Image (cartoon, rainbow over all chains, first blue to last red; front, side, top):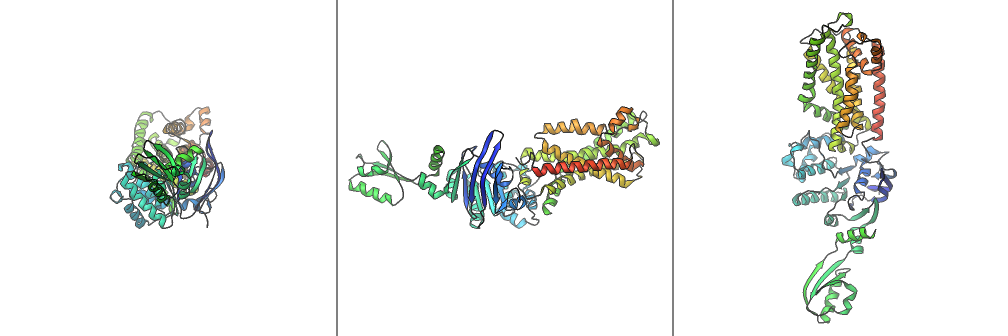
Length: 299
Length: 251
């Protein structure tokens, strides 16, 4: 099947700054893909190249098989992008903005879908309000709506929840998840790693213009993180046969790193056999933040 | 086609929503020019063919307003959307560079023509304006406003800030329009300045447009049409080239 987005050996320089240094990745149709990395890693440049806002110095990018330069009209018509910057046209109302955006994509009578988007993004009450009069969070919602007017099969969201309240975030993710279930490919960049962990099935981590990790979220969590079991024991020293699991010790608090939940039973059995009483127990699930820190530190 | 029509409508709405500033204000400015210049210079400026100076002035002023407003429309629309960042909505879209060019140019021409017509309509209350060759007037109005609309696009693409755009407007567009014979007939200039005026393409726009009203002009109308037509083709090629390569739009 044709990849939703196929990036091959893309290089991009801005003067003396190397923004992308040979990025290659392929995102399958229907994926919920996360693009992570610190500020300046090249995420937005990569998105700009995919969207045609920037031109790669070398390499090739295809969106659903259409080259973003040679077949730019086809590539752009299947792509919806939510830009990171809070941009808007101050001359128009929300509905006018969405009608205009629909028109750019060749859609004339699109009000049924526009109303549906407005409903899902909780924007109905603001439909006839001028863009200038909206709060930052509302403007962000309109940006999302603009990216969706043409029901693009591939949707790129560049930090869509920056500066957005919790309620809106939940609403947005619910809507985006539904779009993903309906078959839309989602590419997300975010600094909220717990969001990426919950939503994305596969992740790419970027640093200094390169992809430094590319795998399923599950594999990355398994490889670079794990289940941390925090135990407070009743005075006694832990049994020696737990040594293989011990990650660290802080006073009477012991942290064990488990590979899977099944190991918990084994640990508790050994403690019971050694006659050690557990006073407190806390299980921390795998954490993408740890993966991120380790990948960034390693590369 | 829907994409092009939408962008055209959006650009038309953009100036129409603030028509007090984009249409009414330039008409008032032109009327002030007419009032002051005709009062101050009518007795001093000699116009060939026995045409009254005030009557002579009207087509020039109308054309000058057309040119300046066509330029202002495309240049300000582009620089505003570049600076606010809303240009991305057009750049993300599948609109072709030709559609983009045509929509911006046609909208800007419309503003220029509306302002020009407004100037002529208001002036017609005060002076008796002949219209000897209306098709010539129309041809020069269309071509002149198209040239300035395209030039506005070039300026809007090139400028990164309002300051640079103001420089383009004040140091190129304004001198070329003011020195093009709007306020005088170049045959009354000293030989050096008269021949220098022949190097200014704006002179041919004004002179050709004026021919449409009086049936007489400083340069033969066909020559003017050739110069103006040639300038239009050259500017179209330049602007389309810039849009195609994404110069200063797609980094």
